[in-house]
Length: 392
Ligand code: FES
View 1 (tube, rainbow, N blue to C red):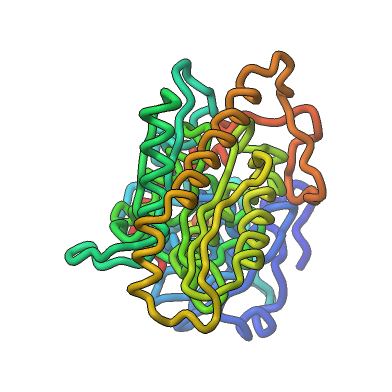
View 2 (cartoon, rainbow, N blue to C red):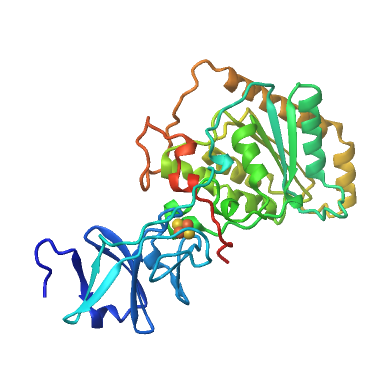
């Protein structure tokens, strides 16, 4: 039987066919539905996750709950309430079986329940507050914080920051990644482009994740970022790459929202290694930071390496500790970076909107010239932080 004109019931499909899948995404009369079938009972709830719009019907059934495929929020498959008892819910829909078919109606849907929360502080608009040039040093060397040893890259980073503070009149800040506990990027972008959020979904979901001060300094505070890394097997340190992966969320805002979170900021690098590949390491770092939107001074890195046959690391340490030329070169790098930052800050006609370069538009991006403020990115995330445990 087809619904008579004006009937609120919409035909979903044959019961026999729909029973074949435990969980599926359907669009019925324009409404996304997560339809489930388990233990002889159908359930239908809204297919849109209230967190960031993930497709609930493409998630997983865990008991009576549907787990969102993007970040793991969970909702009862029949009544739409939070799977972990939080005061949030998605609409659930009335179903009936008739003449071998399943029918759904939307006019009697249970109401959505949304948590009203303050926006995450990192989503505020990026505004450069008045004050001297700010230099942010990031140490990426792996180090036992309990028993630190001498690090050539950390030593030179300290030389640069001291010079910036004491001779150039800058404010400085140093974060050692080895002292932070933070999770690896879990590749939400690979699930769906809009699943990668600003700030990183992990930062929003996991209060124990320690990367927030790095995001705060990079996006909201610093004019100059100095990244120091040792060379490990011909590449930058593993902590550097762990950080770079977690900075995807900054870069992805270009793709997703045509928004450059990094503007008028300068990056420079300090690279040290017992063996060589300085230019390969510098090339990777330059490419990555250029993709984030950073500008570079002329000659944007200093480096030190003693080459393939120099395995006497104690001499390498002594060289860096005592070589005034290397230390002076590091101070000059800081001077060039700060001068470039000052020139950018003093520029009279700073663009309000930065074209995204080679980045392609994706999803619901704003059109060029109409960039949204970071606060308006992901409006659902502005009011909803993850109230549950992390996905894994
Ligand atoms: S979009 Fe569903 S958990 Fe993030």
